[in-house]
Image 1 (tube, rainbow, N blue to C red):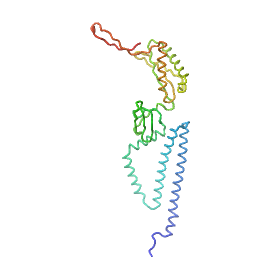
Image 2 (tube, rainbow, N blue to C red):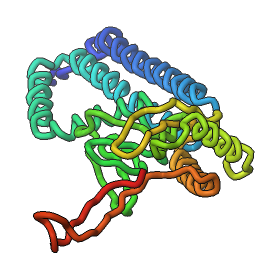
Image 3 (cartoon, rainbow, N blue to C red):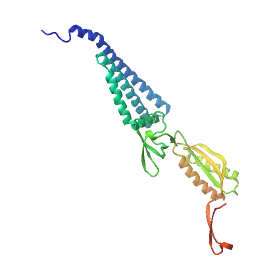
Image 4 (tube, rainbow, N blue to C red):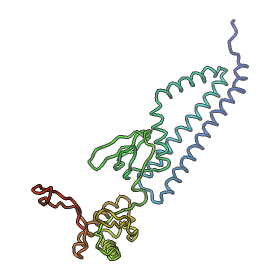
Length: 297
């Protein structure tokens, strides 16, 4: 009777040596998986606590980051465990590692832009550079963030155009609505006006806005008058600014300009404006129509 390729003793010996090691490898991989889940859960809590309130978008960002980190760590744990088990089975893992390295290199060359997009998108989410609803300027395009993913950022501009921007092309991101915003205005008045009186008038207008229920909640601090900022061709420029809630700076600026125009008209404070004068030339230009363009002052 032919002998069996594997005797009972050899099987028992294998189970007591390599089999036990494989069992410990699987147990270690499971323990590592549980540890990763606990760490990711605590990470998500830390991200949410940093925001104070827990809005849905922040929760989504935390879960997205947690899922990405967990997937990456689990891939590493499974790869290491698989390599160790293959070695315990008596197979040579050298060619397997070499083949995996070649495949990984080929994929890396073929998907460089995709990898760059994903990595950049991960850090944008991780650092909370901007989120859905923010007004940003990225890759030379400005607009409201409508969607975010690891690969792309979707913006909609004032004209309603939707821009799909690969995250890998974003080298600088300017967020105009993070935590708070600022309305910065240049108010021009004629040179003959008393600038101290003008600045006092601007302060009165701002105080009136802060008492208005429609604006009292969105203006965070009283108007700051920085002073005379420039001597323009036909106007003295006074620079002022408001600190507002995010995205509300444009509403405040528009209303402030409206009230400035109305109040200046009532008080007789002149706002210079360009105008054109037509007259018949004299001397060498006699009989010719001469156009002179200048601003009132």
